[in-house]
Image (cartoon, rainbow, N blue to C red):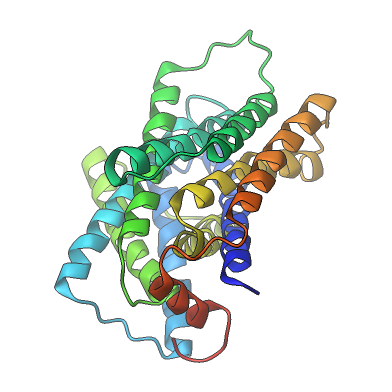
Length: 312
C-alpha cells in the first residue's frame, strides 16, 4: 500500500474504534462506577497492553527528558478530552455527546490555519460541511428536549482538547515508532487521570463482576490502544485536518452499534446522514490522492513500525 492509503486506512480504523466508547462506559455507569474509575481502568489496561507488545517487539522504553515534558502535555490534553466526554455522559445521552464531539475537525482546521498558516481549501471546507450536515441528521432528538448547558460545555471542552492533541502530534517531528510514542502518551494520560481523581475526591472503585472487567478491557483496547495507535499513524502520514475529518465515522459507528447491538430502528434520515458523512470522507480522500507526504521522516518511521514485522 502507498503511504496515502495507509494513512487514510489508519485514520478510519482510529475513528471507528473511538466510536465504541459508550459500549463499555454506559454499562459501568449503570453499575455505579464513576468516570474517574472508568478512565483509570481504561488507561491502566491500555498501558499494560502496550507494555506487553513493546517487550515482545524488543522496543526500548527510554526517552529523553525533553520528550517527557512534551508527553506530559499530550497526556494531560488527551486526559482532559476523555474526562470531559465521560462527564458529559451524565448530562446527556452518550449518542448525542458523541455526535456533538464531531466539531473537533472544524476546531482542528481552525487551529492549523490560525497558528500554522495551513491553507483551507474549498474541498476541505465542503468536506467538513458535508460531514457536519450528516452528523446533524444522525442526531435523533426531536427538538422537544433541551440540551444540557453543562453537558454541551463539557463536550465542547472535549472537542477542543482533542483538536489540540491532534495538532500537537502533527507538529512534533520525532524518530519514535508509533507504538512507543502512544505508550508514553498513555503513561502521562493515566497520571493525569489519577491526579483528577485525587483532586475531585472520586476514590478508585474496585470492579466486582466479570462483565465489568470485560467492559473496561473493551475500553482499554478499542477506543484507547487501537484508536490512539492508528490516529498517530494517520496524522503522520496524511496530516491533522484529513485525519480529523475521518473522525466523522465515529457517530456512524455509534449508529451501527445501536442498530445491530441494541436493535434500534434505522430510518431514511439516518441513511441520509451516513451518506453525507461518507461523501465528505470520500471527497477529502480524493483531494489528497497522490499528494506528497507531509512528513517523509515520520511516514517512513510509521511504515517500519506498523506495516512490516521486525524491530522499528
